[in-house]
Amino acid sequence: IDFVDLNLGCPIDLICDKGAGSALMLRDKKLKASLMGISDALSCPFTVKMRTGWNEKDPIAHKLVNKIQSWQVDGLAAVMVHGRSRLQRYSRLANWDYISTVATGQNQDLPQIPLIGNGDIFSYTDYEEKVAREGIQATAMLARGALIKPWLPTEIKEKRHWDISASERMDILKDFVRFGLEHWGSDQQGVNTTRRFLLEWLSFLYRYVPVAMLEVVPQQMNLRPPQGLCGRSDLETLMLSSQCKDWIKLSEMLLGPIPDGFQFEPKHKASGFAKPQ
Image 1 (tube, helix red, strand yellow):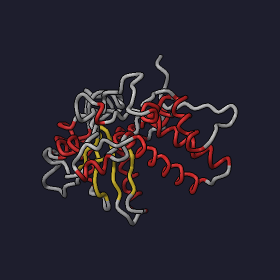
Image 2 (tube, one colour):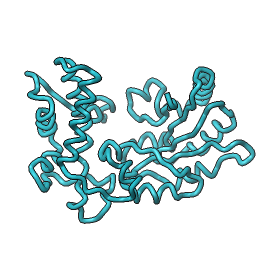
Image 3 (cartoon, helix red, strand yellow):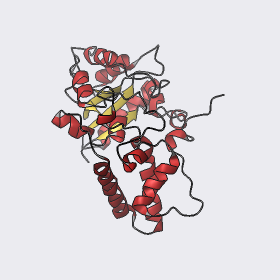
Image 4 (cartoon, one colour):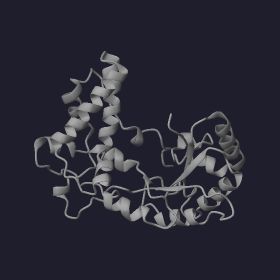
């Protein structure tokens, strides 16, 4: 194990209602005890990820990072801050100015905790602009950007906007399926499990719009592709579809026909969040 991360960033109701995820940002004693316990139990480094706070109007990450700094926890290698509040979840843009404020607001009389930013990095230009801000480490955490564009680290490393073809993207899916079958097995249960993980991933992958089809480069994280967008090939058009039936069709191209009665709904659209009253 290279490192372990304590996630204070999860906004899902089912997690927060139990006092975990983002709710742990509001529980100083429990958080301190957790960090000290992790420090005692692990021989590898560990990190903490958090959001700006519970709501956008009352950010608390700058205060919380200072508290963690004052606890002087052995083995804590870095703190990662997602530039949105818990109630924002994934709406609106991440506040990288505030992330910089958190980084530069640490107590200068205590050892500084490396601070890594997170939020809305979807291209190498996004990455370079964001990590250049004062106080932030010359690296960043990738999240949805890497789910939608798993080749994003390559773009960052090579400093280019990669107009990846549909066949190259299909090769990535083939590798994913091969890894899944190697891990879960090639029997019916293994195929079913691999298919469900593949479909969860496809529910993110369709949001990518090929570079050559963009009016403005690079694509922005918060801009979804329009409905019914046609690609440069039938396969690319299928990959651009936001319909579950088309994701299932892609899975059938890789794993064969679905079993009778099969249904799929992405977890991030299902029961993870409470229904509006």
